[in-house]
Amino acid sequence: MEVFNLPLETIYLYGLIGSGILTILYIFFADVVHFDGPDFLNPVIILAFVTIFSASSYLFEKLSAFHYMAIIGISAVMAFILVTFLNVFVLIPLSNAEESLVYKESDLRGRIGSVITAIPVDGFGEVMIESTSGRIAKPATSFDRVPIDNGTNVLVVDIKDGVLQVSSHQEVETYTL
Image (cartoon, rainbow, N blue to C red; front, side, top):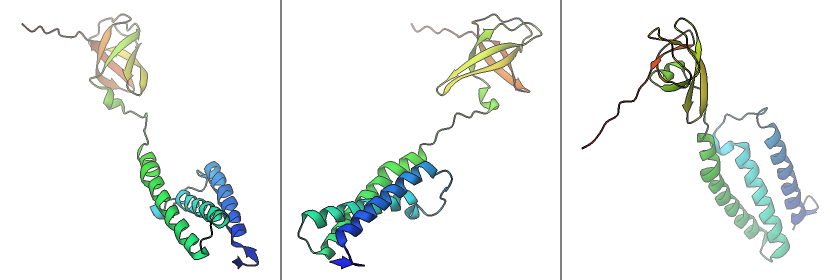
């Protein structure tokens, strides 16, 4: 069959090439043309559907003797199923997997850190606090107004103006009989 004096294989091939080019352009410029609409109108899903539909239709036209309506139906169902799997198993988990390394200073209260720059009685030192997302180095003063040496484990008692107020921390050992 021909549409607009072009064989169907050519139309499917043009659709495949066009959707492939648009997909590559969307990958590069997705942040510029950010999409905030319904999930089923997401450009990634639409471009994936058109690409899979065009590729499978082209292959069926070239390699099988099916009627063109059967080819369109089979290709549409196959593209719908594959795009649904892509959305459910790849796109939705990726959109929910955003992770932030941001922390609030109030979250540091009660944390244990290690002194990396000695803290004098009335001066500033530096404390390193380790977490699962990395290490945080913050300026610190002594809460008890006593000097604290390098390598000492400290407990963050309070935070004022971005400066940790820390106290020496010693773990309590428990023995079971």
